[in-house]
Image 1 (spheres, one colour):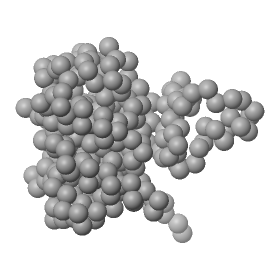
Image 2 (cartoon, one colour):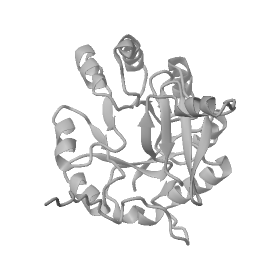
Image 3 (cartoon, rainbow, N blue to C red):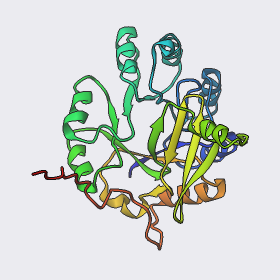
Image 4 (spheres, one colour):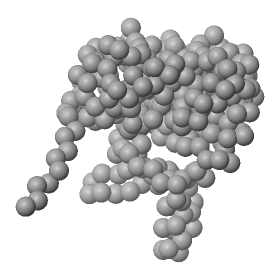
Length: 272
């Protein structure tokens, strides 16, 4: 049975999730994480650890800049004193700081569209990284081949980032058309499809038009942990889906699985 980790969307959602039979939760750390609807301070994380026996993990998935490094180092020192089980990271500065400070936590590389090959996963494994969050941009066969040599985690439910810019694209556009910005989340229409677009202080992210849902493929996938992300999902709908994953019950419809069933093949155009 694959272990389930949940990224909550709110305090209410977190409270409900902690009552279920999952392995643990992933809490995005404030000022050092992106692409979430709620962020947690270290004091928040400490309080949550004291309330549950489940595995508590922390996400630090922001691209770091020079001005972030002092806060990052201070935060890692404080997290090392807590019963945090895993630290999910995007930026390799986390590896270097953890090594320098002798941080004794399981590190998990968490890089969206990167880390798509056996070589890249082996690269991190050889540097002491315990787990890899494998990209959703490759097929089941490719995931299973990489899993023979690495401890893998896969996002199996939730919206996936497909584009990121450090620019504040919503604000810039609304300013151009002389409209006020009323929300952090908007939608881009492409025909009948609508893509969520989130603007935060760190930049702007566009997500898939619908949540990926791998529940019907779960038995075929060989990974250690799966992630369910509640971001932008109705709470009742998310808890229903979570229950399906806990019970390993398939749905009776075709779900969006991304590239899981098809290879991404790029061909360079021929020129005479």
